[in-house]
Image 1 (cartoon, helix red, strand yellow):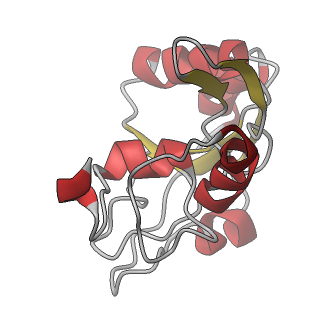
Image 2: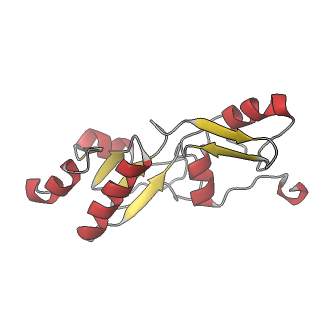
Length: 152
């Protein structure tokens, strides 16, 4: 990308990288595929994520959301901008026992959420093989479910 193409991303306040090393690190996931993105964004908040996605849309650049990159079918890679949610968005907040709800960041790892919920007698149903690494945002983006999905 040219400096002129990168400029709108700088205005988002989000850490967006276009260097070769970062692009190579995010060119693969757990699948056999390799697609080098034009850049990688690391939003610290929903506001930064919205701003960087808006900047990509304004520049006609495709966006691929990414959790931990545990997808076996290439869902976490793409030619456009990778928006990595695993680095900063790891908050677990607002547990509502009566309504059985919990607010989580897209980067929360499944096993961490279930460890948080266990003392309250709850768990998050999907049971993916990569639960020690899989993030909730990535699981949702990938439509992950796991072997116990019929129970839930």
